[in-house]
Figure 1 (cartoon, rainbow, N blue to C red):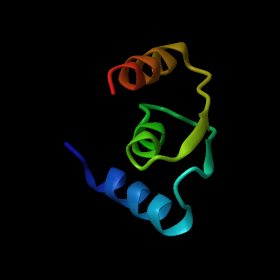
Figure 2: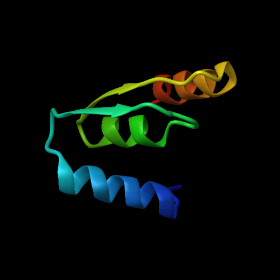
Figure 3: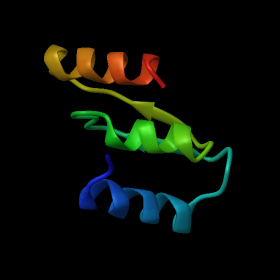
Figure 4: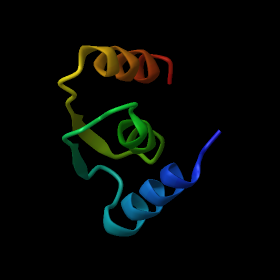
Length: 64
């Protein structure tokens, strides 16, 4: 299920990039930007200092 924040991120990515572009997410948190990038065929670099959130990110991305 996509929430309003994810809709906004998707809109920003769609309107400001094209397929294959590289997007940097310096605070992955729970991984909205990398997931949306994968769905929209964008490349991404994301990092997260908190190991708990990093594990969530890795799990979410591995299940897409």
